[in-house]
Length: 491
Image (cartoon, rainbow, N blue to C red; front, side, top):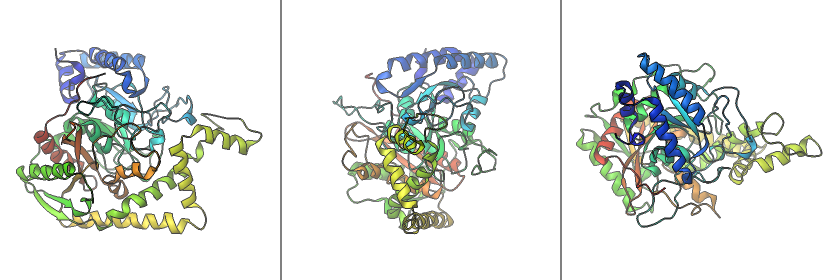
């Protein structure tokens, strides 16, 4: 029998329906794999009892012919999604042993469709980071290694646990969130597919907030088809989230394999950065050739405000974070460090509960929102954001269906290698991804090849609002040309 942990979601789904194996067998195989891979630190909480119960219930439904779209599929859940009765911490000390009395909309929809929860996945604290090194539970280790080296690499962030778990076969798929690249960058670093859908496509209700106008949930999967299957279950209107869009959810899977003939693909000239590694440039060119060979037309486009995206993002995101994280005060739930009075208790709890990166962003955010600076920073950044959005709208108005760009400026780097003395060095990892969040657009990262050291590299496709289907069609072309990437097992 094929190793059950190496199956794609589509294959596992079809095999479960054929009764080639049971949901319980599939779940047990993943629980065993998780146990052997604890060195990766991908899971911050394993939930074997819940997984077995959910798998047994799935087997009963499969037996009755009442299978949901994800019946019996074992998934990992980023520790940013509230899971009823299961500890949810956002990988921060300040939430302590918080156990939510409610379920996030995204996870509720996955359980509704028959999925099985294996556990909660590691992430950067409050999703603030590009390497998964800011987690209170310690860094995640990328299952990929440089050829001939045993150095531990980062899986990217903030959804590093999700990317590592999917790449290492510790779940069939996983949930992530993307505020400035937190799905697409780890997907590229781990050699898997990750999509950030259009803002409003998935409900944010019950997901720990970082920056509310930028956060969006999305799936990680081994293939483009698998990501499409997961996104359909995760999407949909939710009256509990005022930013959730009320429009029908397409059958994303049907778009996989659709012809891309005649599509216009924009190549933004501003993404050709000074000092960009030659292998990234080469990969980008090769991706364009693959799309051209499939019948698409490549056109150079201009997004003139791209250079302001990163600075504007690092004003808007911390400002919203400072506001969102004000609720963690040690009063109602989570960590409480006593003080002589209520003010001191707030100060002590927040100083001890938040890690260095979160404190940094709260202080930046509070500063840019303060009287006298609001207009100079926050308001100006929002105006820049409008211009970034308009750049994309102008290109789409000229008949461009999607844009092709690199996903990251490099392959995965070593743990502790970046951002020690200069946090900006770490922020530059988001250079190709933040524009998509600022404009609220969908973006997908698809593995497209390897660098000279044998590490995976990804390409990014950016689509028109609510046109994830085109991204799945184009992503499939790249996937077919590049082939699937799997790390050699060392753990």
